[in-house]
Image (cartoon, rainbow over all chains, first blue to last red; front, side, top):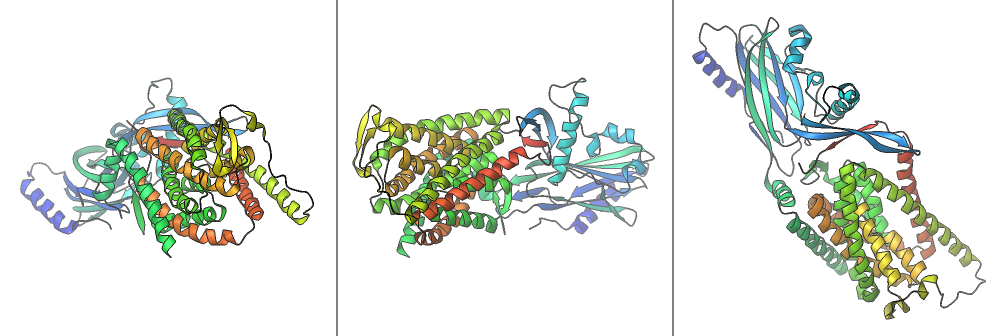
Length: 253
Length: 305
């Protein structure tokens, strides 16, 4: 079940708006949107594919960045102590995006030099992941932890180091897609469309979408976190009932 | 066919979960133990966060024990008096265990604690069981020596003596309470009922008849795992009811088949097999601690922010 809207119809609307609103003085403009503004995690949720589409005028390159909701994370390194591997050193990171992917019409370094991307914090290597409490002195020591954090997110398919392709048709319409795995965190995602011309960002647009727990799963999750005592009691009651029911069922047969 | 587990926050194939529940249920039906000591590592192995695996497994063992105890109760194999004394210790034990668990989670050593407890306990209990059952098998082949009717263990000299008519014992209330306390800690830290440890302790340390030991341990496990479930849910929000239910469905079906297989095997053969199983799980967990990990780094999402 992959939620989608019809991108073609939406593009047409966007394009009409662009044509109407575009003042003739400015050559380079970009508009973009995503295929779904709200993705609901239901009990059979298996992830979603988000299509990012839009239109641009002029001949600049397009770069699209998708960032998931940030959360604090702790990275631990195991060390061998007395023959066994134990979590020893650790680094805590404050605002770690829960999802990160970049799409572009060409390899980033062909579009603009590295310092531009560093300044814009685009690309996994440019993410501002700073360990908590460590200012200047901890930076080099924290580098392996930072690298491990990104690597772990890549393994979980939450970060994409590879730049995703953007299809451009008729020189104006563009389209790219990104797959959100089922375990991608819920919350607000923001998609930023950049139009880059001659090594500089000409225009940016932001669009948000949300992944929300819905239906029964949401009820259970909220109940577990908001009323932990009642949830615990209910869990025990369900266990007792389920166990009794199972025994009763099999006694008859 | 996947199902979204709302507390574990991931989607997993239902058939895989049912299969796991069924397989562990089969073994637990064969051997008369809850199977938590197998299920928790397996859940962690398939990607359930360790904290959720432990909290949820306590919940599932509670359900499995309810269904198991009813059959034993009908046959009069539950020593309620003994169960209640053990429970007095068990309640305190599981509260201590959940508290220790929370503390360890904060310093990032929960996985280590779970693993170490597994290695030590499963290693010791498995070795004892295998040794004992092989001696029993050897004895049954050479039926020469006479079995003593009544054995006096060292714990029988302790104060606070109580009568336990069902178990035909007149012993101090302290050893059962201490055994219950230890089992309570285990229930909280390992997400297991502790039957694999309780039953041998009740038979060999207290001198209870085997059938009564099995029934009574189930009775007390219900309460200890229920307390552990409640405390894990309250303190850590790590009990996934959906996961527990799916596992339970698999487990009750597996247990029915397992009980039938178990009835065809001799008691000492069963104990030897169970001992080997316990030993191999302990060995596997221990091996993973010693072998250099594929990735030295691990990432943990901060909870409760």
